Image 1: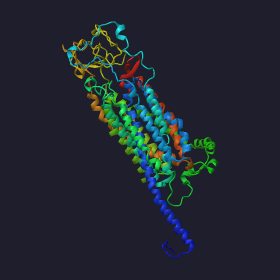
Image 2: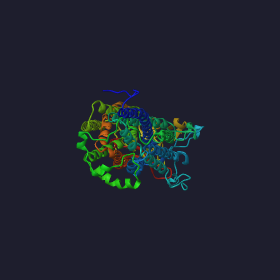
Image 3: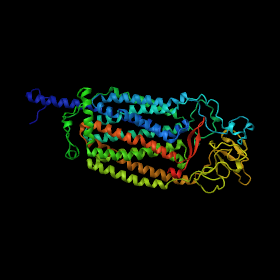
Image 4: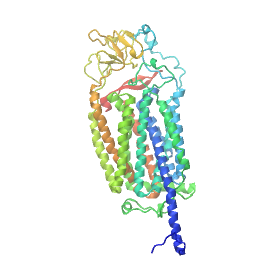
Length: 621
């Protein structure tokens, strides 16, 4: 028999039923907007942190050249973000689950914004960028100095004025400290945000919501790399120098773009992402009768019961700090005793070591192997590679919902996609270009036909009349199609023109049928690269899509194979372990390996080794 709540006269026992149904309806209408608001706010926070993180990776060559540092130091700077995470992530993940999660995320976004502004600070306290060049911009080109100096070694080797008073503190320290603060601020976003969604979303929608957030976090790098591409085209000291006096182009190994500008933009966006979280509640009412979370029969085979978790504090309980602290290490021990969680953690660490190293230096790889400018390399990463990753992650979440994959299904799917992706990646070894032909570096002056990586001397009989520096990098392209390290080492004695239009003449080392001239910059020699580059991009897109397909199922495996009370701690410790054992060391040892392939190092203004100018691309690959 059915009764209506609109009846004027109903027995008392039915009034309770009507009131209960009204309460459920009102809670459903009340909770829905807050969950959607949190989803939008978290997506924007993911977008902001992903944008600034990808912009950092897009500027690694700019930072190398601006601060004259090798690749392994760039790896230290890049890994400092993970160091910031390492300092606080375990405690934020554990204690944050008991506190007001949206407000903790808001504080983290503010710290990320401050750290991003600190990274840009050195540009405003350091002097103007000075690069090695023998080319001058003069109104009267007849006053050009000779590129073939004759003088004593002691005078030529002396340091420029001002080196005595130059501070010993390297400006890249500010970049490192700012990145550490960014890492600290990013800490609560992922574990607290994902656990908040999983706590208050229905089980069938949780995977889709997580897939949406992860997809937005991959869309962020698209804009990060595009911003990096735009800023790399703009000269670093734009607004402070006359652009007609700049004698190098964005394709030059000495070019430094306006790296600082993108950090200011990213800092403002990150600051805005903090605002919505201040207006969200600590918890959201659940629509429908809420029963204690129970495991499915399949989860029961994965989840190991622990007496410690029987009296675990719910997120809404106001427990004391001391009580939570006492439970921390026993709870962590219980988590690490879970076999499935531990195996997944080890596999992820191994996988991320290769992925992080590849993503960090991929723009640089494109620059060196396929002779593209930093701007173009970043642009291609943003419009081709990153969208493939975003599509793969979203498709993975969608497939998991459509196919109704359980824990074992998600594990098999993630493993299969990763295996196929890595097998396809082996074909990258067959895709590269011939190294640039540089006399005295990849070619011997005595044999300019065959590339050789033996130790060559830049001094020979044709430039013996000039006193040249072997440490300078001021390349010129001879009429014979060979690049020379400097006009002096090409044996050039005179020059005409000004700035980028300077032409060097009487170059005794060039010697092509009486035409002994050379122009500024390296010789193009891009015929073989132009043919190979499209295949490289196509394979890169395919492998990125396939590997990222398993991202969302793998992530859902992580949070479904453990007890619900351990979700925040499991996510936080997973992030802690992967960043400690992959995020920090991978960029450093990848950078150190790349440094071993350098063929020609630049020189700092006041002495010492600077950034690498040209690599052995065969060994690099």
